[in-house]
Length: 78
Image (cartoon, rainbow, N blue to C red):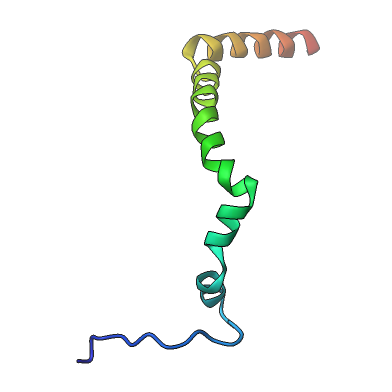
């Protein structure tokens, strides 16, 4: 019987950070605040766009072009 955990009533004031997280009304905020409601939709919609930009910016051709541009800039200053 030692492995059975009894659930007691919540603290009147949650002192620890974990107790504050568990007693926070997450469901209320997700259902009644548009920021939480559309956050996951926004991440899903914008992820492919940012992934494409990341792939284009880090392509070998772009890195070579950037290195050449920086080399020319450094040569013109010296």
